Image (tube, rainbow, N blue to C red; front, side, top):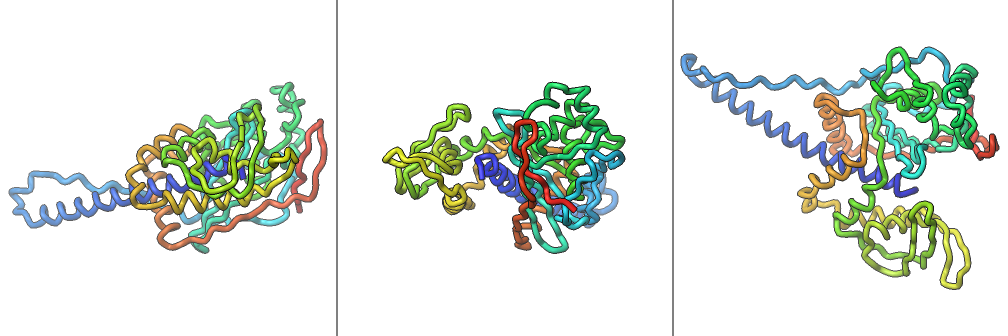
Length: 360
């Protein structure tokens, strides 16, 4: 799990907190409005010149699983490439979580958060970024004509490059889900065709906010298990951590969660399971900072998230739907499930290594 994946977790947590706060404000406003109406009803008719603003009609959460932003599913984007099994119920609400790579144009993280009100579950469907996409002849022809340089690049057939293919070819379905977003429309239509999962909304996250959030909360105290030494100037990644209990600032926290290989004190190279650091960090962060005292900081955290996030959820009605849904997830204790997309092997194509999707 990379820092990008961590920032996705932070985004979900902080947006959920914001949603609960907004929900509380709306509830209080409605209560006050109700009291005003009760008072108005008791006033004599001749004194009722003041008009109370009516309560806005807010749309109920769509439980059918059908998106109001229905995309086109006309022409095939692939050579009938279908995942071997269903991964989400058609009635689920599905949000595409994207972690952008700050160095390259490809997406580093692609996760579908599939929410079932029926089963009270949130499935996190983790799509391997190196999956080979078997594009149809029509798509390949258009791809080669409109973006010949990218067509010949290593890795251009990976799913994490699909949005770039859609953007460069000017993908324009008859009924796009997301107006003015050819790359996102192409990727979401591809996800539907391969996994039969309808994407209702998306969140695309930059990674710059990870360090900023950790620093804003004053760092995190962690017991570093081993000596960690690793450098990669191309990623601006310099990890130098001594073992033992210490306060990690944003920069060192990023190094801690990303460490998976390096050198010990004797200069010997070794690999390390990154997942251990993931759980240590998450446990420490939530124990130290996820409390009522820190709710006052939500405004600043929201600003950090907003600066590093692009989302399709824009208007009040859509925001309110997710506020209600977030409240349900927390109050009704939805279970969180992790779903790994299975692959059947690897193959080399045009100098790049790909994962082969397990298909029907």
